Image (cartoon, rainbow, N blue to C red; front, side, top):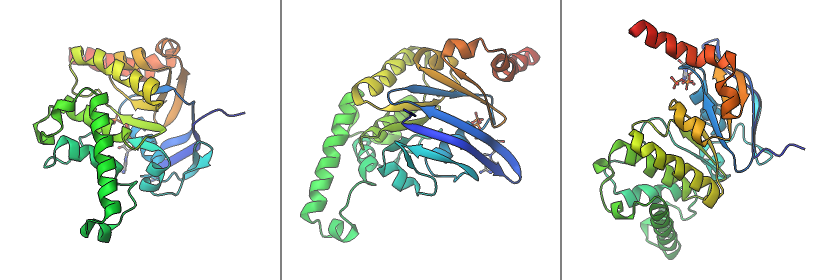
Length: 263
Ligand SMILES: Nc1ncnc2c1ncn2[C@@H]1O[C@H](COP(=O)(O)OP(=O)(O)OP(=O)(O)O)[C@@H](O)[C@H]1O
């Protein structure tokens, strides 16, 4: 029996005749923190784009909780319980932190434009529920004091954490994080480990993260999948992957060679 919450089955994607994902399989169990690593251009972001419905795969299937999600719109996939953050900040800079968090629920609200214009009761109730959920999410990440500040006043690292909190307010089953630790100082990284574990343990959210900060991947992930040139070249515990000769060559080796030639 397949116990995976998220299953990727034989997914291939080509851009301009070049295969950037080539028959990828991935099974992520509920409650897992899965790392997705690999050298630049390996296909990691494309993989997240396939899962969340931005790029339909040319071949293969993606199942969330046993239901095929290929061909559905990203908003429909979000409603089924999939959250996502991106490499660059997607916050609305002119809005406050609280307002930004409330946008995380808008794909779920049912009152339409007319109800909103007329300020009807159902619209007001949904806005109140969204605000309450946003305040709880801020409390969860320890940033309640930032509620009324403009998003543009936050540091880059704070913006990343707010974006993660925004995915949580719609109560997702799985959240995809694209390089969430970019811009965090070493001191902040330890806190970030803790936050990811709390999201898993207290919110019951399964996490899949692309990350170049190897220390974070090794510390926090239960399982790591390694992509290189669109193929899955290794998978296993952080320790097993770290010692895999193919990974050292394809990923760490490339980095070490680059450093060597720069020195
Ligand atoms: N929309 C697109 N059109 C054409 N080529 C694309 C597109 N998106 C990605 N690619 C190409 O697909 C390959 C995989 O890119 P992708 O961004 O998925 O890699 P990645 O592993 O996430 O890399 P990085 O670590 O640098 O973010 C790259 O060669 C990239 O140039």
